[in-house]
Image (tube, rainbow, N blue to C red; front, side):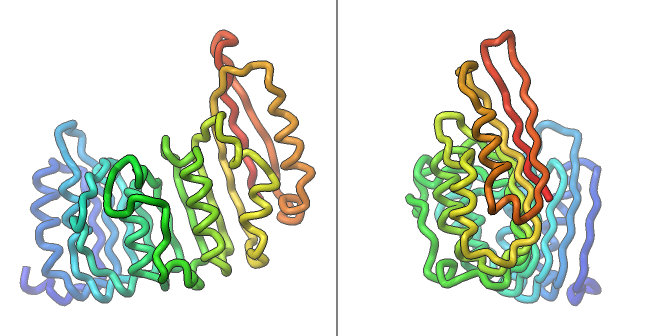
Length: 269
């Protein structure tokens, strides 16, 4: 692999046995000059683990600007322990990962304040997982502002639709004053309604006068079949914040023998 030590752009599309993919990933430490790394790895076996992703998040790539990790290999959850992910990506500008542990996401945001685009499905709860980040706290570097961030896309997680998720957004979004695009696709808890309030969204985006595109998909299930959720939908339609963005608002619902209702709220421009 000597001839590849100065490689700057590496793209790997892989559908072969997991062990073969690991053999390729083990050569990543030789690619210290990488500027972009794109991996789309899928394996049919059910016995693969998260070792592939852990190899990547242990790399020292001082020039890496783009990191895209797709495929079911990266759908595996990482068991994040103290000081396991010792990556060094100081030049990173764009990252898109299928799944990312909450603490690893904070580590990336802290190490890469120049990020322009961040896309991932977050999972894990900082308090429940008992790591050193035992509370929803943003580092001083993040709190000072992710001024280069133009696009933020966050996906679904069972923890993210409750108080933890809304608190995280309240802390993070004000740190991204130049955000142009915000995308959120999550499952909410019906007993925590903050994410389902139009006024709350207007509050967290109060200082985002550069926001041009928003796409929200909020799904939740409830056994309270008598609750009039249409009132909440109407508040989104009458909100001056969403009206200004010229969004299209629609909702669907399905019932399970009238014992449980599942709602989907779509807000997009």
